[in-house]
Length: 123
Image: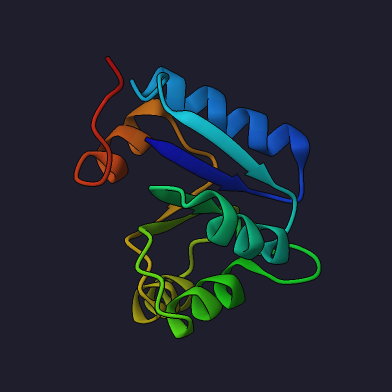
């Protein structure tokens, strides 16, 4: 399976990838995007099985990326990994079709719980 990790911080993308591995999802192919527009383009060209996106990014933020994907007919599973997790943000993410919102700081267990119905652990 292929996972797209979108975050404007390269360090945070690496932390998300490391946490995926720690949660048992190490064998999946990873594609990285530095902003929402790049993520949108990569969903179209790479056809990932899951998108993990930050909320606040330059050029296009995560919620606008999700809205654009859904408007184009894409049903790719989409979740947020972001620094904020207010009830309003969670409601907006759910309304746009996000499966989950993981707020930083997070743990491997947080990822395992959020992704258990979406991804199978890697062999």
